Length: 387
Image (cartoon, rainbow, N blue to C red):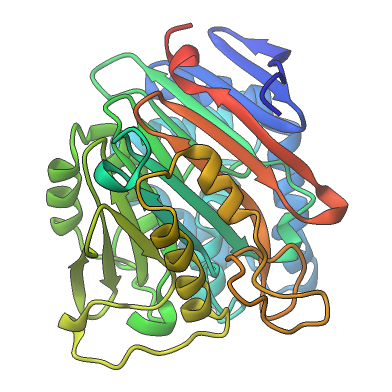
């Protein structure tokens, strides 16, 4: 839907909340604290809904206790960068929601796995092309976030930050109250997304380390190139096993990260790469294996279509590939299909889809689930940064 327009819903100081075809766009500007205040005030009702949907049921059952709140606040806040601390403080101030709640909500994925309530982060897929494999040599990225049905009632939120004080402008896709940079780009064209890696790297959550989810905000805020991003990633120890798709305007790779075994860097032949939830680097010395979310089948499908379209890939081609489903309606695998799961036919479904034109700082977002369907919707991030 190329012609959709941003509709202004609310303002808070320099902050702006827009709706575009059902997606929320939160534009914030200022210091970290000021941006947090704007974010909190603009999204307070949506943050409360995130809490009521994801955490309050556990509170009522007694499975999420006051002690849990205390422990995870201490971990999420005390070990965070000053950047994130100030943003958390601002969210609490702007929304009126206790900062303990804010910190637990932002770490909800790690908390859930630590308490063995979630089998994984998600079952995500990414496909990227650039150089000789793309139509014009520019970098194009695509990504599915596959996870739980419980997230579907929450609006997909694009957080667009214009910091004052040295950080780079950035934009990240997530849910209200979750500021972790799941799927992100910054003004330098540095991009990354996160995939679950616990089925390969071990489902060990190290709560005596800074949250990997919080560290993502620091990475996107400070990296001026892919080399810088990789150096910063190598300078941290993961608190949870995951896989990062990483790119800038010129090249891309993946970093497979284990909370127990460190990092491995992986590239593929040519100017394209496919990333799923299986560790594929031979340097691990372990067998390549399938996951409950059918990672290897998703990998095979995406790579097949990237190879077929070498030299022709752009944002439209990636959207076409990621519109293809993994399963047929009867539950059989879709031969030469794609990675997308609009309904639960294995262990999760596709919550949202994202395609980036990195060179032009443009994003397309989609929700493929029939009861929450929103078709491909474009946003010019560069224009928002220059607003």
